[in-house]
Amino acid sequence: MLQMRPGCERCDRDLPPDSDQARICSFECTYCAPCADGVLGGRCPNCAGELVRRPIRPAARLAQHPGSTTRVYTPATG
Image (tube, rainbow, N blue to C red; front, side, top):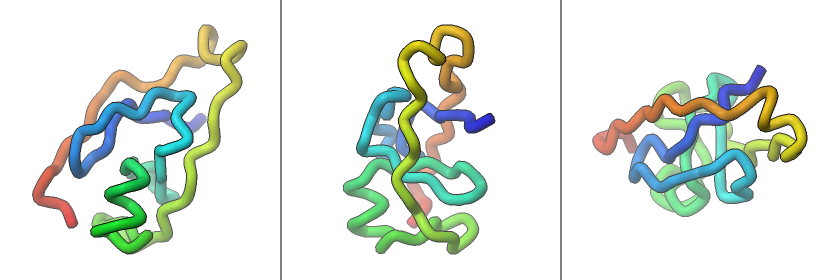
């Protein structure tokens, strides 16, 4: 199941599970749209994979399957 990480790994911007601003790669590295589409040029700095819009988990499922609370923040990335 997708972790739905709570923040951008580059700038630490909050990205709640219902955010349409979250971008992920196939390894679930997570970035906000401004970082992903801007300075990172749509590529994950960790694996060079494509950064795409993270799906939104339906609100009814969030209670049973909440997003992750573990933040990954590496400002030197990208």
